Image (cartoon, rainbow, N blue to C red; front, side, top):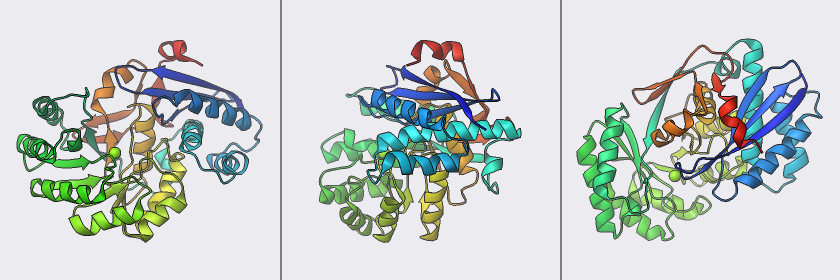
Length: 361
Ligand SMILES: [Mg+2]
């Protein structure tokens, strides 16, 4: 199979606080696959350029399997200089190639990836503040709304409130509101001071956090391991990192219990599965980060998690849904804090090309 065209879309979503990058890959037989790249604020246009360059390379390949594409990215573009911008762009094309393969086989992508361990993938709702000065009252209100929509796992950012007493009040208020039967995930979003991270985690501990995410930046493995030893709460890291070497080092240092690489930032479906296998050999879990659209990236995440035995829970942004629904739909039933995969071939993504057309770049 050869590739006829690769189109790119940069969607300035405004109300979602970030841009989305999609790609449309068309095979010579006319089958179309959709991909998405993780974007970083102010760097989305550069990521689009990488997608275009990788797309040009893709069109020269006679073997366009996801594995062959992945090998060529490493050989032609990476050259020992890892970059999340490049791996995000590569993720977009890798995911689109899986979508094409699924459609050509007439099967959901998960059925091509390996033995299915689940078709219903647990999700948590990310309750990222809607405004810089969101009050605790408003956060509690939104958590209750998410709870009413069926999410029984919610992630909050208590360090948005300072000093530590107010952050602790935030955790306490949310816990009291959502009840003891919901999981409360805490994201510290990489604190500068590891000792303060320990102090904060111990202050939050009485409210039974499900995990404590990114207490310090993901590269600071010794500090992360130190925090983990001292707090006794599962530690999550990996959303800003890429590469097997990095994740192996996290596990060797016993710095985390759960890895959360972004599904369309880390390289795509194959990379996620390989990292999950590595984590499994250390007794660790995977919880894909997905600060992405609720269409293509969520579909890719669900199909990957369907075959990953040690997948714990995936990330979901309910706030993105109204905007994303204008761009397309997916064959996933999102309810009861889970995404259940349907029978549609490929990723089950139905993008509205007319809605996307103004964003083509
Ligand atoms: Mg995070």
